[in-house]
Length: 605
Image (cartoon, rainbow, N blue to C red; front, side):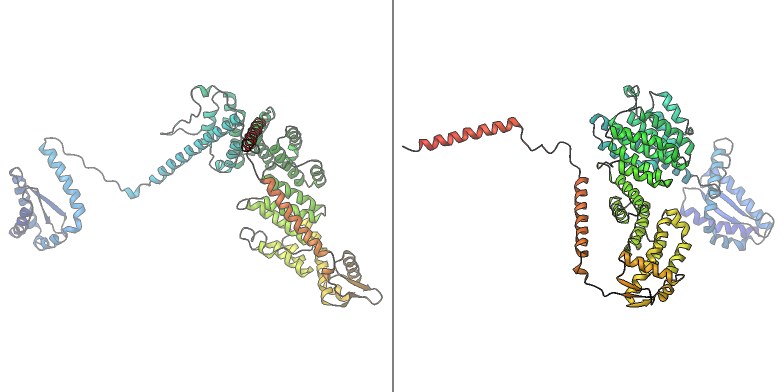
């Protein structure tokens, strides 16, 4: 058995030497898997003379193994064929053997085995690190945006150009979405360098963020600028960011304290450059009190600021405060006081379109409650025209709901296209069913819709107006009956309209005749209604009134478009000549005329 195993080893050896005579050779020998201690044995044979003794010892061990396990020879060829399957394990074992041999040759201790850890078993921390890094970069960009906004505000103050402040306020919603405690903490620490009391007051509303490696200190004010106090406009803007952050995180009590302090600072200032920022601060101040259900507590403050803004010709603050007061009254259903405020105050024409849209909506709501449906429809239509076209979806939904009810109260049917708009289709579904009930004059369907969506109508604030539609449904039914029948009994009318008695039908038909809904007469003795023949509508004043309404509408659009145009200041006299230039030009014309006259005189003998 020993000879066979040795022969098998010799059979493998020549091919190994020919393939690479100058490098170490490794020959694989197999032990019987069925016997005790079965496994793979690696034998290292070097071509150099120093490794010959180890090769002889390896052959002796193989001979002894072959004597102990007689089946080794039969498995040798099989192992030669399957060595490719264990190639990764062979490479690892070879590396370990090489390190041990080098350590022995150097006379030192063998190198310890390195434990290979399973990477798949450990949690993958790379995504967390990447997310943290991206958050740091986003915070750094937000801080740079805030620094740029403060520079724009300072530029507006120095150049007395409010358009730079408008640019900052236009970017306020996107900036507020990126705010977090880390950004606000660094911004307040960086800008409020000279006023430690204000900085400590504002930082009390924030938690100090944990310092991490790689954090860069945010220092927008260094050198001489650090000792200069911050402008009131920039200070109000930074504190406004804190108020918005606290409000968005539903920390309304802290937001109220911070906003009250901000209002005290604004009330103490009288700077025209602060008007735009102050108007935005008024809005969020009232918003905080609305979340706390304390709008009545802030009403007197808004009135005092409105008087001040009117005296100072602060158009932006005046428009914002008027809208806030109207909203305050409408929340508590104080329509009479809201009407008095509208009648005794003048909304500034220089206000922006957003404030105009809010004012027109509140005015239309007041007019609708006070039965002035035509005026309400006009103001609500203008509110939709003033509203942003691609944003403010919630505002447009609210206006459309009220406008649909007002048009139904006027006896008109809204256009079906507005119910099909993607942004309005779902929210206007109850009003679509309501419109169908009014259009067909089906009182049973109207009561069903009112019962099914009553809570939603109350939430929208249109339930009171929708209750008034019951009489319109009945009038529509009377009109449909009048067009269908030339003569019909009062009993049939009561049955078709689902009324209690023919007397009720008689009263309703009489009121419809008086209001001009139908052209008919009632025979009280025989109990029937006789419809009159239809007359030519073009022989009346209705076409003239319709044309007048359309012409007035077009003229109003033209006037509002002209008022909405913005012109550069003092550019109207840029191309006009001054008085001195005009005198010089006239003098030159006179001299030129004299020269021409002299030339003409010289030409005659």
